[in-house]
Picture 1 (tube, one colour):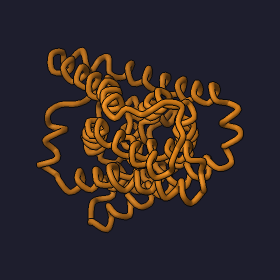
Picture 2 (cartoon, one colour):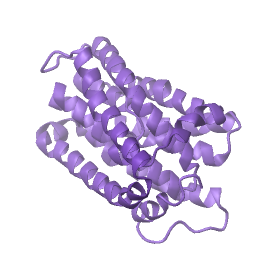
Picture 3 (spheres, rainbow, N blue to C red):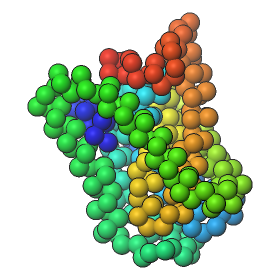
Length: 289
């Protein structure tokens, strides 16, 4: 979240007023469509109540930095992606506790500890708003330095993401293997449904392909580290769907990004080198491209 803050300026938030259709449609998908799809996927695959709640938390999570990187790779509207990630991250202080409470009541989950609404709000605030604000403040005061350190921080964020997902899987290995057969199809179904529906809604709303690409990747690449952090403070099992989803989401998002890179720029080749390396290398230079 701190690395995301380094990329943000006030213009990213003013974009809601300047180009409202794409932002409002994307936020509607993130804040309402994705969580409801998570409820539906949990029901369709008859997940254990605790795992069902974990999947809903994942569905309610904001987009992450990986969505911004792959949007750049796909030649989507990176500026829109950044705006959606920033605003949905701020909104997560309300939406994650809200959908967490609704999911616990709906599925009747028996958790290891009682869920404090205020405590969850405070935790999400500490993980999202505070580092985001610190990153923005640093950029405002030291813009040149912020641009210089941003690529290194993004690489560190990618490493941290991988370590956290692996750690979540390893710490609950026996439970992951027991539930993988039900969680994996549900997570994959949620991912595919969210990306497909959000892209389709964007096209039906007559948004350009580049904006629809950004929205679809925001819905496909949620902030898994935030979800795992929140889930693990309540019940370790809640983190299992987020860990599984985080592993699967690149299997769909990367091919989609490659396909859209060709569609959004006919005749152009995707960036040379590894997918994430190519995206990260040009990300700072092409935010608004």
